[in-house]
Image (cartoon, rainbow, N blue to C red):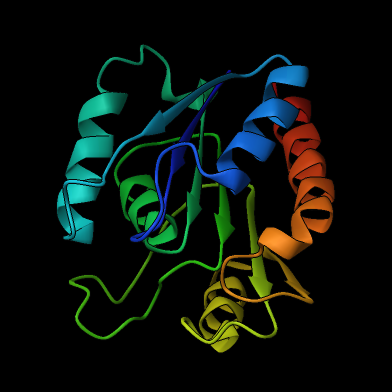
Length: 169
């Protein structure tokens, strides 16, 4: 099993959250990859880069996508055309003005979304809408957009998500 992490617009491929979650994933036997998008501001070009990376995978049913903020949009868009095993999103930039896609008919399962109540960048209501449309797991937690002060809670939910993914094997 392999996890592809997609970072947010103003972050990097091995930021605090990704490093933290990557260690949790490795402890459970997952291989991890984090795509570097810092040279691309356009979320749809970032999605193309992730799709290109996934072309090297022989079995997408053994791939999980994890995305934060703009990376959540990227992961979700890619899941529309790549039959991956699961989707874990942190404060995903969904239903955002100026983004090409505004509908997300993914069939990916399981889906878990974490969003901070105090997020002043992406309204948590966007995650509520997405999760209602997809009957996905939603965890609204005490935190801001970056969620760095809530890593332990994020880690607990991520670990539970990974266990669900592994149970599908």
